Figure 1 (cartoon, one colour):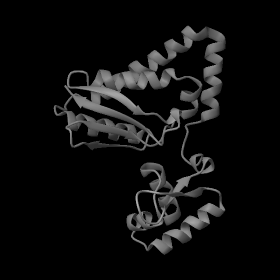
Figure 2: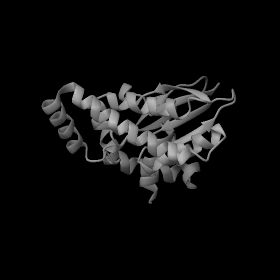
Figure 3: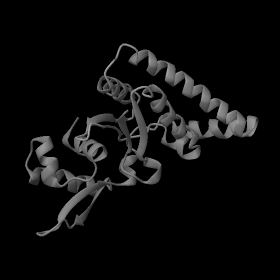
Figure 4: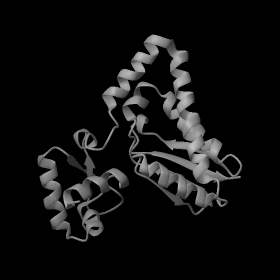
Length: 206
């Protein structure tokens, strides 16, 4: 992966960053990062904004454009939308709900099988993040100072389908809640479909 592609992935997974922060992450100078950023800006893949935080000079942070977002996989978005429309037309909203429920049960069974040997909550979250990462969600997780955890998904490979039918999003939250029900409460705090930078789930031990 070249530096330009790494910059796009860093902006996708970590949100807005300065040239200096990108340079540190890539092991290059901030000037080198700026050259790559300018080339990406010329392709309309990134843009910058000045952010004022406290005293001192404004900080220039770089963001992904909508065109850059399209570079990340969306698992045959057009086909997904056509299938949703066809199911709804043929079987109505109840038919679509049955489809979502079937997918939920299949996913839940696969995740439960992967987590069945895990005892610690942190191990379960780490395994779940790894599973989601293989599915294209660019997932990771963090342990927070208050004893809770956060599961982060920086990309949604079924975003087109989820936009057309939010039942998929509801279903995925319910899967996480069911998986961890004996040890934690799970709440969605950020949502890509609400124009947040990512989907995030707060996991609080009980």
